[in-house]
Every structure is written in C-alpha cells, then in structure tokens.
Image 1 (cartoon, rainbow, N blue to C red):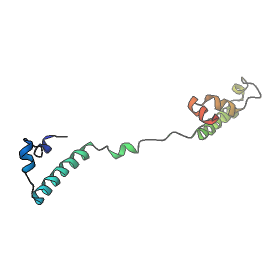
Image 2 (image 1 turned 90 degrees about the vertical axis):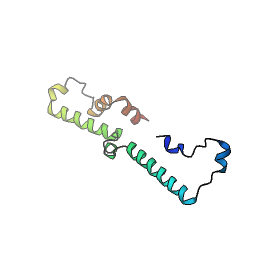
Image 3 (image 1 turned 180 degrees about the horizontal axis):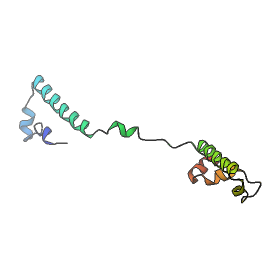
Image 4 (image 1 turned 45 degrees about the vertical axis):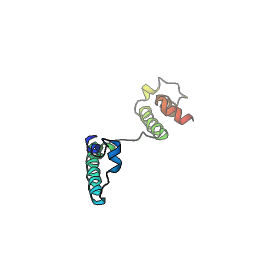
Length: 110
C-alpha cells in the first residue's frame, strides 16, 4: 500500500493542523478517491477463484476402506493361486484395513 496517498492528511505542524478545517464536499471527494485507490489495490491482491475449486477434500476413511476391500476381493477372485499364499482364514477386509494409510486407520479406530 502506498503511504503517500494518506500523506496529505498528515499534519506537518500540530498547531496549524488543528486550525485546518475541511469543507464537507472536499473531504468526501478525498475519501472517495482514497477508497477507490484502496479497492484497486485489494482487488489486485485477490486470489483467483479457480484455485479454490481445485481443492479436493480427502475421502472419508470408511469409503476408502470399502474401495480398498473391493480391490482385494477382486484380487482374491481373479488370482486364486496368488491368494493361496495367505492364510485361509484371512479375509480381504483385514488386508484392506492394513493397507490403508495410518491416518485413515486412526480415523476408523476412533
């Protein structure tokens, strides 16, 4: 922000500053001009709104678990020989839980 915009209102001498009076219209014009300058500066600093829509909230932990479990069920059905490497009592949901990120696991446990 440019400080020179406000410099015309700064008193150079405190005694004469108290004696100076503004006419209402003159003061109003000065304030309107200053507000316009400030609005231009603020609008130049504003963030492009398209960046706001690029934010994608994280998936809920349960939806992430269900998606991961469906992937593991597909592996179990499509590759039975590979699935035999695991214990027979191990289910796809258990593996899906342990392959989730630690943050998602904490959200599911709590």
